[in-house]
Image (cartoon, rainbow, N blue to C red; front, side, top):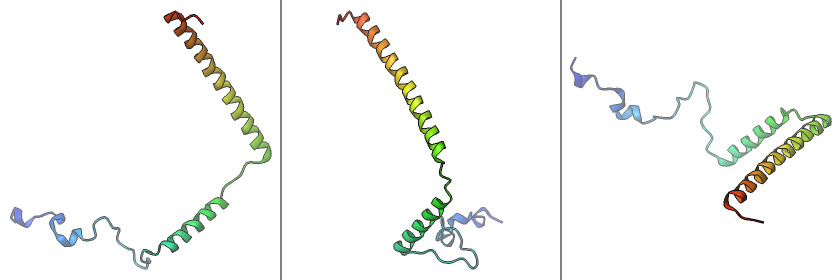
Length: 98
């Protein structure tokens, strides 16, 4: 067999015609082209997924909210303290008397 006879499959034009598109399985429907059907299907799936959501109880919601507010308060105090510290150091370094 010569090297010219052993060409890879990508050089054939019929092999590249459907490149990138998965082969449809037997019994599988053709892809819908109607954008309104796609939108309707999307919205149905969104509602279906939202039904699976487990919402927190009132007590959990209050507990989580308090935890978040305390954490935010601590971070505000930390960053505010660093701001005051660095501001004071800069004023001392450059001799700006205020």
